[in-house]
Length: 94
Image (cartoon, rainbow, N blue to C red):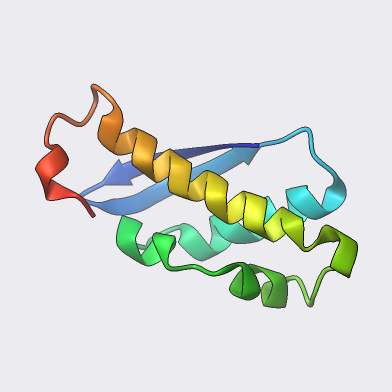
């Protein structure tokens, strides 16, 4: 999974994802994008796998890892934002 974010004034202005994962992964990615859009990066980091799962009306036990994968990928996307050349001001984290 790959999550792409557009940040404007520390707010997630747009967010999308790509995956070659299963339907549950695609559903979790879709929910995460809806939950994250318009939040600060810190607020988006606070989204829990349980919140994603509840928004999906609960995934089967053998697919619960999909919501964890999705949330971890969002964290990596945010971390990469701070490491990129596009953001020289790392001291203003979240």
